[in-house]
Amino acid sequence: MSLDEGYIKYESHWTPGPATHVLAARELERWRKPLYEAQLIGEYAEHGIGYGNLSVRRGSSGLFLISGTQTGNLPVTDESHYSLVTDCDIRANVVRCSGPIQASSEAMTHAAIYALGDAIGAVVHAHSPDLWRRYLGELPTTNPDVPYGTPDMAQELDRLYRMEGLRESGVAVMAGHDDGLISFGTTIEEAAQRMLSLLRPL
View 1 (cartoon, rainbow, N blue to C red):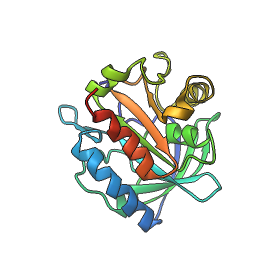
View 2 (cartoon, helix red, strand yellow):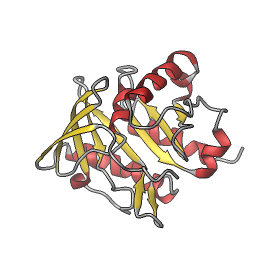
View 3 (cartoon, helix red, strand yellow):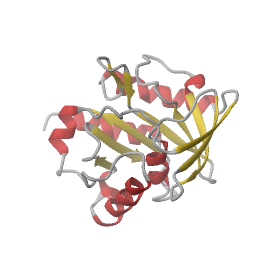
View 4 (cartoon, rainbow, N blue to C red):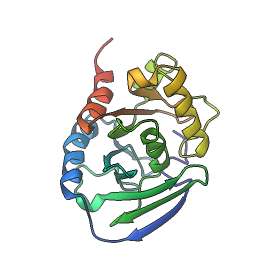
């Protein structure tokens, strides 16, 4: 596990405010629960650093609701633990969000996934040393030299989507992000189920 896990690498503009999209937050929690129970979302206890996050698209203007920074350790979340990303400039590496908490450090990566196509409605980012080792190079895998949460990762995900089968699999391994995997789907159920299905014995 890289010790920069969980640190925000983009320029963040956060507007504190009340929780919004309460029903969407509840649906995210519904699928976060099995991911947390499977330790795909959690905390590196020895470092006190949370990992894993999930999001859902809100409307057609690029908005999405994402779990807040450093919430991976929480057994249960509610609407106060989610942030609405209102704008993401991938080239400038700037994320704007609002709500009771800052957006996850992976917000830029989530935005890059949503930019791949309007049909993508939800994203899950999980951690698992076992799954990471098992599927590295087997599923679409990012270049190990590309760090998470950066504009370069956005370009790399676009490459995988266009050329390496990510469109079909809906799951990618992040070679430059120890233990990191990302999945997406039309709904949060589909995105979460794609991630959970990796746990099945080969």
